[in-house]
Length: 206
Image (cartoon, rainbow, N blue to C red):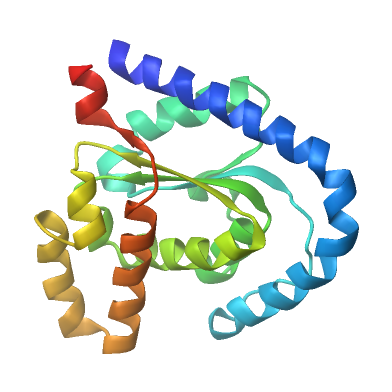
């Protein structure tokens, strides 16, 4: 519990600093970036039938996680802590409207967020929805979306190189999805796995 609370506190501090920096820069960058954001948003979501007509930022944080692994423990603690700090956060079961297609809702929420926190757990790669979110997040990084990975009881190298439990997950994906989709997911994992993040096991040891 102490480790979890300490990690959440560290994340909140960094989030607030990043948000403040973005807010200060927003006035000078919105005018020049707005057109480019709209064009890139439409292109990225064409295959997911996503409504990307709005370039506004409705969320400050988008949480990407596998519910079976972390929804009722770590993610729940983090989500509530963010809300307590007044940080508008998207979590699928809180924000998706009844009757809305899950791909449309998730894609739109990602595009309307300033920061994406990805909680990589042992079962993250086994979920096609998690990988769909991840691929969309990586595309949105080109539109200045900040990404903060958390390695929750999983080695960052397993995420980056698709080894260990992530390798097992991709054995199944190769049977059910086309090569282009699988390679897109692997590339996204490799790119985000290279980012500096929070490694739960190393944090606990420290």
